[in-house]
Amino acid sequence: MSKSIGVKIREGVWSDFMKCYSPLITEEEVVEIETLTDRLTQAEKELGERFVIEKDIPCHKVPRKKRGNVWMRTIERMEIGDSFFVETDDNKELINTRSHIQLTVSVMMPRDVRVATRRVEGGLRVWRVNTKGVVG
Image 1: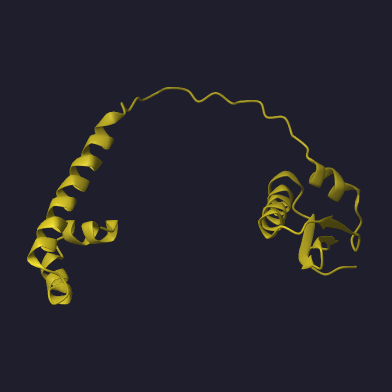
Image 2 (image 1 turned 180 degrees about the horizontal axis):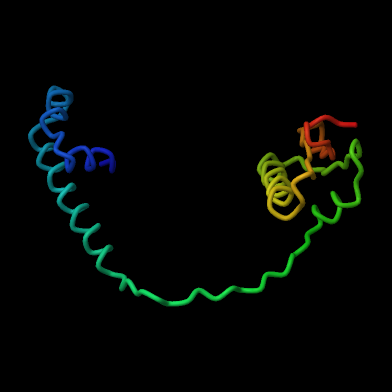
């Protein structure tokens, strides 16, 4: 049973729920929904009590070194309009590579560094573009 039904029931919308869905569900299913809602409420309560909340515990800064990766080093060497090709026939690998490149640019590189990626025959091509997304 979906969580959204449990939420609707707990918010007191049971009568509206029954008006909409009563022709579609049996009495056994109504009992099952009520049972599942009770279980969900109990599980949420147990989870909430599982952790002890503490105050005035300092959060220490962790020194982070800027880790480089092959995408970052390659893009740093590029000028606007330059591109490189990543060869892959596997669609999943292509999607993962594209995501990794975009994450690298957005998290690890200066804001003015932008890239455009396009699926091309045999793989993925990556261009360094200006801040408006235009090559050259």
